[in-house]
Amino acid sequence: MTWPFRHKSEPRIFYGWYIAFAGANSNWLILGLSLFGFGVFFEPLRNEMGWTAAAVAAGHSIRSAESGMLAPLAGYLIDRLGSRRMAITGAVILGSGLLWFSQIHHLWEYFLASTVIALGQSMGAVAPYQAALMNWFVKKRGRAIGILQAGNVVAVVLAESLDKPFPWAVGFLFGNTELSLELWNIIAGISGFDD
Image 1 (cartoon, rainbow, N blue to C red):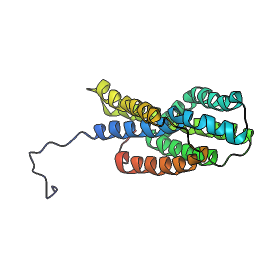
Image 2 (tube, rainbow, N blue to C red):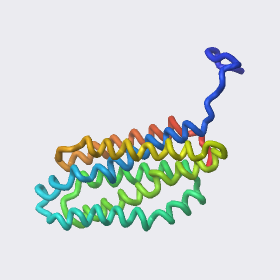
Image 3 (cartoon, rainbow, N blue to C red):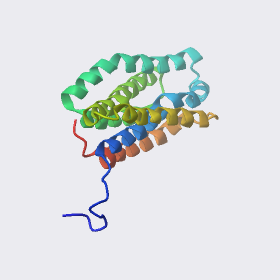
Image 4 (spheres, helix red, strand yellow):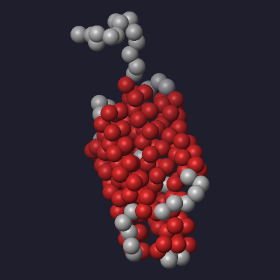
């Protein structure tokens, strides 16, 4: 049965391209909010919490180090559980970490929230989409990965556009926005991809 608005001769778009664009969308959301956009929170956190610059930078360093250390675990889990499950799990964990980040009052909470954000970032950002694209593409694989990585550029542009610091508690808004947009992205954009 054909769709009533489509002519039979009209070519269909290869489903792998939807995964590539959904991954690019995921990258700019996850990396823009959790990694590249951190600078807008730096001064407000120092001023409101009274923490030193070293303490605030340590949280960001913990997040970066944890993301690197958790990458092999994320890769193993992607192979074991599949790309879709890991993308969803990573988005939920990252959103939870951003929500927790908006409610911190103590330095230890900040460090733990940074660790949760790193866990979600490792599991839900680039790796699950790259694994799915490797399975979907034989030809034009480089182009698909290039589209996926284009989301990183958008994330940097997004972070650079946030040139004025604002209250760090806006992380609550980022957390809700990121979680809902990322879950919509996964459900609507790549719900049919196989691992």
